Image (tube, rainbow, N blue to C red; front, top):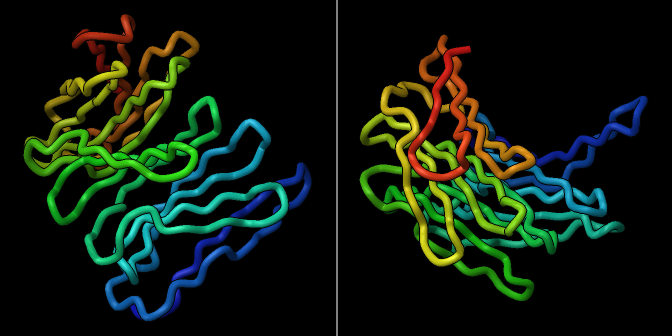
Length: 219
């Protein structure tokens, strides 16, 4: 039932066996859809895990990380404002997290950035109902890239930051499904794998790394 406890667990494979650790148990969640906590995982330069996830009981984005000996857990967004669904986490060159997510109250794509002592927040895209199914990456210059779904136009969108402002591009305007995964190659060129429909997988890439020159391939 939807009010059963929802667990956040971390699995680690040591080369021969898996070990599982329960990190959080969220109870009294009357709106939890089958325990979906929208988790995202990134590994830092010391091989420590960093996890972002959505707390359905309190409508908040949360962040937990292993400091080498113990787990630290904290709220990123304020309780009750439905910010944090469809989150995705990446780490910059200092191993500081950046988390893209959907604001369900305003239907916007937002990002939370850890600066070493506190979180800062930005609205990346607020045109229409945007920001579901985000996937974030950080390039070699510590600049942020985000792929995400535009629910208003059924589009795959791509946001990139040049150090001062965001640029938004429509990658594919014929997307009816929304599983999205963004990666950058060794030259910081974006590659996006996604579902165009329930049975149609596609790959989009940009050879220049800039501009609107996307190539879309059915796979």
